[in-house]
Length: 213
Image (cartoon, rainbow, N blue to C red; front, side, top):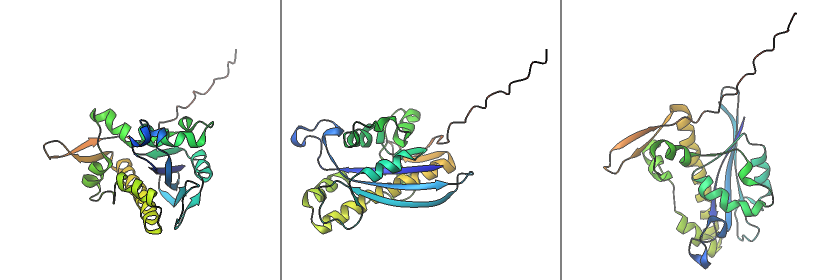
């Protein structure tokens, strides 16, 4: 089994130049962690890669262009993100058009949590209580880093995106292993939400019996 956990950063914010939807924002960098599992679901190898928009300058690692990312997505049994169906995938979709990014096997952690709780939670809110650590920066700074394009800013941008992937990966692994995630409610009490991140079971076809008559 192959899984790809990913996160994107954008060039702009909502409201910049009239942007009202994710596809208007432009993608500056995407980080993705490709992991291979054995038949028992144990990770046997993994690798992080980052992909820059071709206009990026002063980068300190990663590939230019997103074709390598499409190849990673194409071989994945599950593509995992946080709010990925609501934000990351729509933002990335124009980059891969006319290929259909939406048609790939996406797994949105936020979508699964919201289906159980009935409301949204941030990645920070889940990670802080579940893992004991959170993201290292925020999206506002990510846009500033991209607009600066100096070496230090671009290094911070890549590290931030990659750390978001690390946090998302660890949240996902915890949920798979424990069947739950933790968060604080509006009364500041730690709560747990039960989740099932297992793969759908494949129905076995009934054996056909030979008619002897």
